[in-house]
Amino acid sequence: MRFPVPLRSASSVTSAAGLAGAILVATLVFSGCSSSGSSQATAEPTGPWAATLKTMSLEGDGFVQTVLHDGEISDMEYQEAMTRVETCYASHNASVTYDAYGFETVESLDGTGDPLEIMGACAESDGGIVMLYDQIRRNPDNRSEEELLTACLVRSGVVDKGFTVDDFLEVMDSSASTPWEADDERVTLCNKDPLGLVSGQ
Image 1 (cartoon, helix red, strand yellow):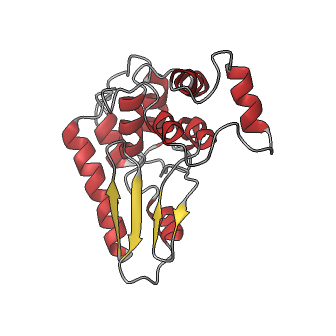
Image 2 (cartoon, one colour):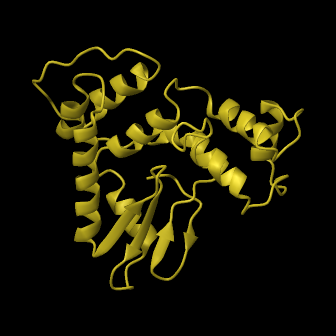
C-alpha cells in the first residue's frame, strides 16, 4: 500500500516508495473504496487533513466509517486496521512486517506466491486506514509533498541549496537519471520521513 518501486526477490518484496510515489500516495490511496451505509453519527473533521478524512469516510466501507466517525484515528483503531492487513496476508500464505516509518516488507511463506500480486490483493483490506495514519504521522500539517521532499534533499546535502521545487518536478517528469544515486540513504530517509518527525532527527 505504498505504491512502491519494489526491491524484489523470488519470494519477497520490500516497499521502497520512490519520490514520485510518495507524492502520489495521498491522492491515490483513497481510490477504489466501496460505499456502504452507516447509522453512526459522524463528526465533521477539522484540521489540515479534514478534506481527506471526510472523503475517505464518505467513500469507505463500514469499518472505515466506524474508525473515522470522530474525525481521527486512534492507536487502537490503527492496531485493528493493522490486524486486518496481517490477516489478509496470512490468508494468502504470506507475511508482512513494517519498519519504523510504516513501509512494509512482504514475503511469500512458501516461496510460490508473487508478493506484488499479494500486496495488490490486500491493498484495501483495511480501507486505507494504516496508510492514512502513517501519512498523517509523517506530515501532520498535510504540506505539499514536493515542498517537503525538496527541502529535505537540500537540508540533507543531496542537492545544492539552489535546488527548487520546480527543479524537483522537472527531475520527476524527466526520463533522464536523477542527480542522486538510487541507493542514497539520505534520499530514502527523505522519502520516508521528510520532516524527521518519525525518527526524531
